[in-house]
Image (cartoon, rainbow, N blue to C red; front, side):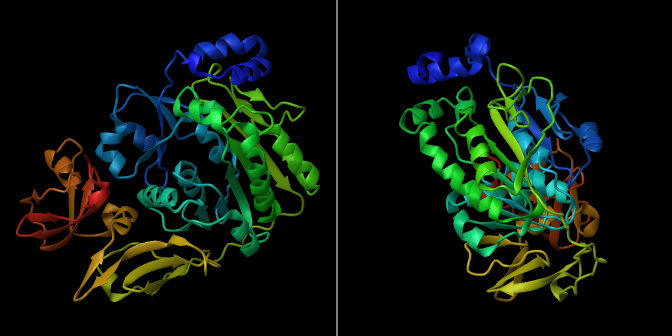
Length: 443
């Protein structure tokens, strides 16, 4: 692996790591430990540990992150399809873990695909406030949407816009902002060798102007007293501390806050000790950088208002899902539930705003998979609750017909695994026609 690193990069790394340079090189001969993060919007960490089929070890810097054995395949377990966890590299958990999101906040994830950080921000919001998850690439934003749909929340919008356009639309509009900026990817060279080849074409100098511009835009959207977490997965000082120094000089209303230092963390360079650096030879994770900025002024979070139940349309009378502080809206043939905090999205490229309930189709209504994942088992009466080791669970996830003789009513069925919804099926006399989306099926 090290032979593929360019001489220029090796020289830079030697200057950066000093006496630790041999340890850094040796880390390329080691495989990283894979990790997952529990979806606390659906299950507590304590309850997940009781049912987890995997041998787990805690990730030190976040309460709901765990390392698992590389021989295990959690991406093939039914709990993954139920959205009980997200597979995320441990160091990449730092940005969302360290951004101090509070209930009721309006949050922006600037470069959100594929969705690992966005899903944790939804955890921290606890079905309150709103998250705008943006990625300029519509293709990447589609993957982002799939992952946040799996999380079972409805207080989000997924957009695919240039951040400059969002900055024009939303000056000082967000309590918290996460900017995981595009970068040269040096911290991921061990995990993804293709990035080594890409670095030879686009090194750190390519990214700095873009990072500065993105940070300018993001700071313009931050409220007084709000906080912004800037992160990259590179070691380059010019992409990290120098970009932060640029922001502090250009925006005198901004100050750098101190981030916690866990065992193995390194402090920032060039006098910016409040930043954190994660190195693969020091801890169980890949390379990362994070800095927390605060805009001066008094932070005025949104006042808590009494929860207002929404008027439920007739099509949803059989469900007991708590639709609150929002309204139903039909756009074309599709029905959505839009929280009050999702506003100002007109004339933007929006892939999803709020919770998609389903679609009217001639004389019937087809409930959406996203709605099934937002439900709890007790919110619907006609439920087929399968065990994780039931062969029918895998059959259902593969899109096959499932048989059942437990006395289910004909019509729509909510299919669960160990009480957690997987999706819908249509029952007729004990034969369940599968409604699991083709693009999500188990291979």
